Length: 337
Image 1 (cartoon, one colour):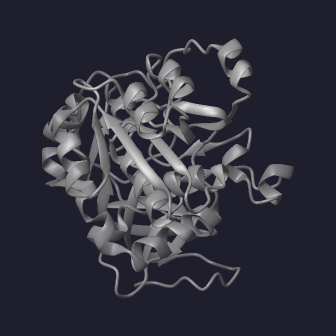
Image 2 (cartoon, one colour):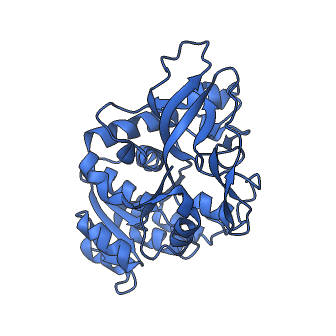
């Protein structure tokens, strides 16, 4: 089968490798589409220490079951259209038993520590399968994994109708958080440095701050009568945004860290204490978040259409990775397998 293999040195080689052989409680998926994530960029550039190099990456995948060994009657069968929850865990620890497998100490990811979806076929645990509603196209359903990240973050924040929400970063995750918060009845403002992503956010009907021209903190304060936002979502993962996050939030605001920081950020704990703010960190998702994400996509398909900016063939993975790495003219880039 055709697959893309990363060498951790910005190489994306198209290779011919055997189709995986499934074992008990596994399914073989014929991959239709697979999104490119920031963690894939980290593997591509050799900056993800958790990755098994060389590796076939890709964890945002959807496809069709073409073989299955299922002794537990999960309800999945050959021909089903499915998305895949890419987390691999022990399944027996207290966290796993309580539905929080994303916090398992043994956590691994399909496409990072095992072969992933940048290939014609991938094998996955049957327990990781989520059916795609019949009326939802693969092209739309491929957003289910990144949307689940946003669903989890918004759920942890316990947003309420009328909340003032500030979001730092209008990349795919930031935009998805903004759209969910807006659908939840919040007053949403999002800041971004990229002109392309600013224009995209504006076209999606979001109140957007051009961070290269306007000071996001001053704008948020001016538009909230100097009060600040009730909730601030950090969706960039850059040390420079932590001060913004604290200053944007009102006294007693909740600060939600969604971005994946690759450097240890400076955090002014005294400033947070002085404002009695509280911080929540959000990490991936649960199975429940994944299911909610699929329902959201099905019920609000049009709301999320502009999140995907490019579909590209598997053979153009290297070009796609370079585009995403620069992040100048892209949102979510998806490979058509």
